Image (cartoon, rainbow, N blue to C red):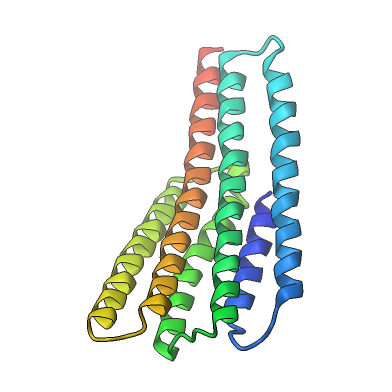
Length: 204
């Protein structure tokens, strides 16, 4: 699911950076990926619930709970990413253009968001304190960028900029920050899974 989430996000960035091109085919492919993630959520959740119905120790129960949260956060992240894709598609259909500065700002926050799924790819094999701290710092930077960018949009609207375009820009920033939150939640869930497992081994 992490690979699917990462590929979806890369697909969104590609669509974002092709503002004058009709990418309906790519949008349809991203929708298929979002549907695939929904199916994976259903299948993995069903499997984990079946596992929890057997005799398992508290450590395994904790790990199952954490894994349920991980797959749920992945699904919510792909939902957000597809919303981002639809916003960019709406922007194209309405003929609204971002400035070079707005594209630069969006790519800056996208770079920060994209770094967290890369950490998630290794999260189930072990979370180090450094990894956890780096993920939290990344999310903090993403939130600061979101606030900074949105304040800029408000200033531009007050100065007479096109309001619908600035609202689309603000929507994208808000959804990007939410994707970063979901990715951070995955790392936090994986860390709690490790803590539960260590506690269970210590009790054994």
